[in-house]
Amino acid sequence: MNYLQDNIVSFYKALAHPTRLKILDVIKEHDEICVCNINDDLDLEQSNLSQHLKVLRNSGILTTRRDGSKIMYSLTNKDIITALNTISDIVTTQLEDQFHSIKKGD
Image (cartoon, rainbow, N blue to C red):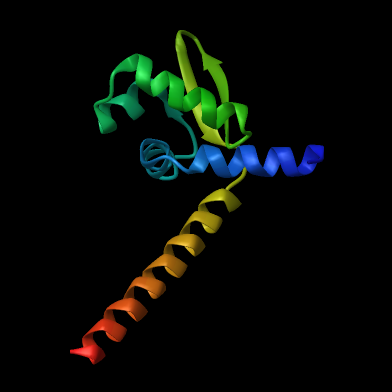
């Protein structure tokens, strides 16, 4: 694989975990959010949250900045949420189609 493909795979892998998707759901509601507020919303072990945030940072999905003693997180690009919403819509449509297909078979 080449460098671009490696980065795309890393990006997809970072999104392929339910906890990381929940983290992104919390972050998308804010331009920027403190890690402490993310933890308040998700009630995860601090070490577990840190590991997931690290994966999201390393894949280029999140960026951080220090504000005094707080670490602030934000999306590197708002189009990430658009992409996630599009995927959600596709999966919802597929499930609805399967449901209607099964229902017709009854």
